Length: 185
Image 1 (tube, one colour):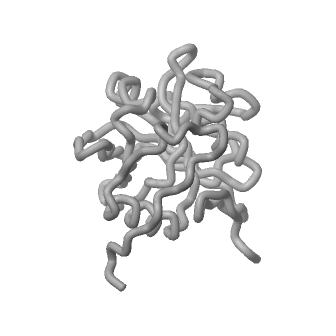
Image 2 (tube, helix red, strand yellow):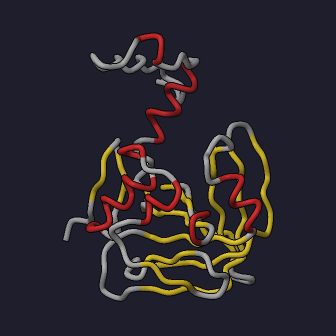
């Protein structure tokens, strides 16, 4: 078996029109199936203030450097949060805990929530840049936008971390194989 073993396209649900199912090359389908086996911590990127607040859910967050403290996140160029991120030039990454699953869904746009509506049902605070920070996040990184590198459908956003905060003795919310998970004790 090679690294690009073809995977059958997912069957559209009864409520989904077959014409809405994306047509992807076999290599893209195999890549997507393989990436679903890579567990990731669930985070929300938050940006903006007041009625301009928005954000998104992501598992594509990683450290880039300790000196200076820097992280990166991949953001879809079509995301409603992309333009505000470039405009504001600051953002926060909030690493979620298992009880934050509804927040992950809200920031993923489930239920049609957009902008400030995604912030409902949680306590928010701010650190250095003024970007919204989830008060009881497992970890929070307050960042200034250092660079945005466009590649394919996404932008690699590099954030210089200006402040961090953690919650001791807490566990992460994980995403694996299309669903949320927790750590087994």
